[in-house]
Amino acid sequence: MSLYNIEVESMNGALKKLEEYKGSPVLIVNTASKCGFTKHFEGLEELNKRHKEKGLKILGFPCNQFLKQDPGSNEDILSFCTLNYGVSFEMFKKVDVKGKNIHPLFEYLVEKSPDRTGKKVKWNFEKFLIDQNGEIVKRYPPSFEPLDIEEDILALL
Image 1 (cartoon, helix red, strand yellow):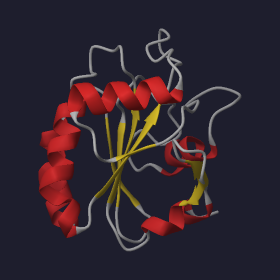
Image 2 (cartoon, helix red, strand yellow; image 1 turned 180 degrees about the vertical axis):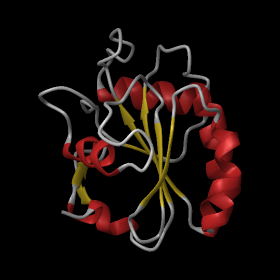
Image 3 (cartoon, helix red, strand yellow; image 1 turned 120 degrees about the vertical axis):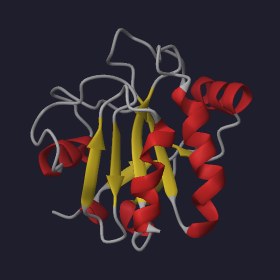
C-alpha cells in the first residue's frame, strides 16, 4: 500500500486521496485544542506562511485520544484553530491515531516511519515529514517545535 492510496475526510466532509499531494512535501500532524503543545499551531502556521507558495502542504488531524484534549466537534475545532491561531493550512476531521480504531493514515505512518518504526503515536502534535514521492523522511516527537523542522523542510523544497 502507498501513502497516496489513503483517503482522509476534510472538515467539510469531502473525501480526499492523499495522491492529491503527490509532488509536494507534506507535514502531517495530529493536533489537539486543549493540550500543552497547542501553541504549536503558531509555529505550524508560520511554516505554512513561509513555505506554502514553494509547495509545502501541512495537514492537521485533530485527535481526542490523549486525556480528551480535543473534545469539541469538528466545527468547534476548526473555529478554535482559525480564531486563536489563524490556521490556514488544511485541517481534517478528528481521527484516532492509535488503538483498535486507528485511522489507516496513522497506521501507515507508524509502520513506515524511519524513526520509532512500529511505535505508536506518543501524544498530541507528533509530526511526520513526507517527501514529494510519499516517503516518510522523519518523525518528530510532540515536544519538537515546528520551526525547528524548517531546515528539513527546506531540504525538500
